[in-house]
Amino acid sequence: MKASYHREGLLGAFQLASAAIAARDVKPILRNLKVITEPDRCTLMATDLELGIRLEVRGVSVAEPGEAILPGARTLSILRESTDDELSLEADANRVLVRGGQNEFEMPTEDPDHFPDVPAFAEEKYHELAAGTLREMIRRTIFAAATENPRYAVTGVLWELESGQARLVATDGRRLAVTQHTATNQGEHSTHGQTPVVPTKAMQLLERNLHDENEMVKVSFRPNEVLIKTERAMIYSRLVEGRYPAYREVFPKKQTARVPLTAGPFYTAVRQSAIMTDDESKKVTFSFAKKKLTLQARGSESGRAKIEMAIDYDGKGLEINFDPRYLTDMLRVLEPDTALALELVDGNSPALFKSGDDYSYVVMPLS
Image (cartoon, rainbow, N blue to C red; front, side):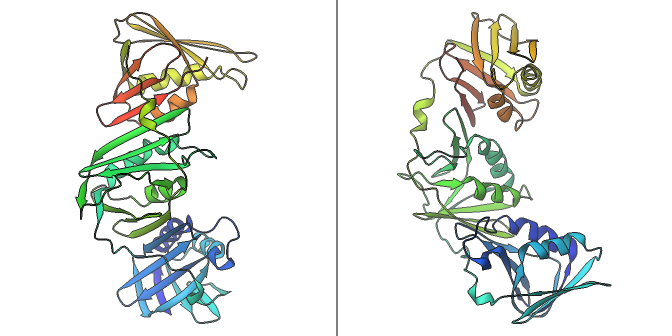
């Protein structure tokens, strides 16, 4: 195999694909990436057996088609440290040679036939939606996914795809994020009767591969896995095993107060009040009164904060306590001028933030 590359293009592709490299010792060969050069294309592959990616590399001139195994960490370091605009890559059964204008690096390699395959996307049934829309949906939910939970399959994002609708859901038991958007259905693809949860790592890799807002992304679920096709990448992932909680039951069944808010000013007030929280007292008290919201926090050693902001609210007085982190996580992914509606029952019931009809965020209060 012999080809020449634009270094920046190869570096960017290598950084993206490297996210699928095994973080633990499954097989030694999985610490590497596989490169496949054909006369008209070049593909990088990486996998940890749970997550895999096929990524097209652009700006490549192929002299001799072939396949090679590239040591992950060292190749990435070479691409980062090199000052050459163009690099050539040669490989045979025993070695890989990376050559620039005034330097070269030779590394031992392995048999590319021993590298596990990452499937190509050949599905006839799938949902399709714009990359910009999907990226926004991921950003609005992924932060709420649990990092660990032995009882439920919540260490990822739940996908619900039916007819012309796509819905993403994430929860860690203390907050719940739900977003939805229209999508195109091909071949009667549906997740009805299933609860497919895509691991957080796979969702992060997908988000990093969504560059062009207008390109269309294809998503197809199999019984235990998902395949996602973008213009340049094909991402494969096993699904999280286990049962997803009945998240719809978390939504409040009634409301006694509805408070209009704007994301930017509310975000600022929450961050200001959070300055005086500490490890022992992580809560901020939100006091809603006519035309005014008061946020108060007090730390055992840090001091106290009192923040006031004007709001368009004429209802009865109501007080509720929140961990401010759960609010800032949500507010930071919204545009500052986003209109929000906060629906409250009382100080002990879950609070519901809504942005239009396509985004809902439920937060459990603190005592």
